[in-house]
Image 1 (cartoon, rainbow, N blue to C red):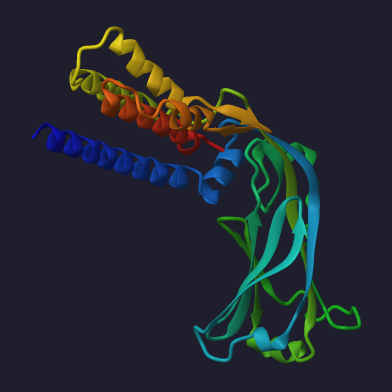
Image 2 (image 1 turned 45 degrees about the vertical axis):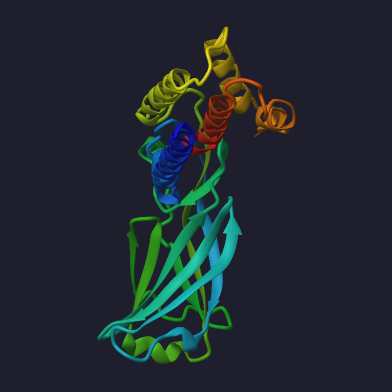
Length: 293
């Protein structure tokens, strides 16, 4: 009966750990999705943002077959046309409306954990006094380099560094041989994460630490044999499971490896010591899940 209860406890604790890790993983991915990090950078929420250059260009050849024929039809392209300042400039889509067609350029920034470059169509407020923005941001030319439309098109910007142009159907035949499209409305920045600063501290850490402490207390109360210094031994197994060795700034779970090699079968209270080491391993894993970019 005691063995069944012990196995039930082990499986129950593992289930709690799996659920907790799943919740933390979901939270980590939500908080660190590209859009959230991008917004934190430009809101200077834990980041220092430095303006580098205005008028960064992207140029590509536009093929006439990309223009849809039917109203409300959208040609999803997702073509990377250039890579600049650690950012992919993407020809996202070409769509057809009743009397015109449009194309969208979007940005896919490759954000680093501590610092890097990034492009945006957004001009940060702190840099407005430094910039003399070029009013001619779109150029559409034919294969000979001549202006194709004479400025007869509409433009617009949107969320997520979207840049768009809209062309009336009456000019569609001018694209029969294709066109070179140039957009020079990007701003480049350098961002750096400010040590010790960022968004409001997450509640995960105190809740997680409280749960770990509670589980260690429960482990001690479940001892099968009285043992001198058991509290310190449980704590030792826990710390051993959580111990890491840094190699090239990567924390390796050296402590848990040592536990598996040398301390896996203690003579007394083996199950609770094993579970304490597993809790330490969970603490090691949580450091990656809680880490903010």
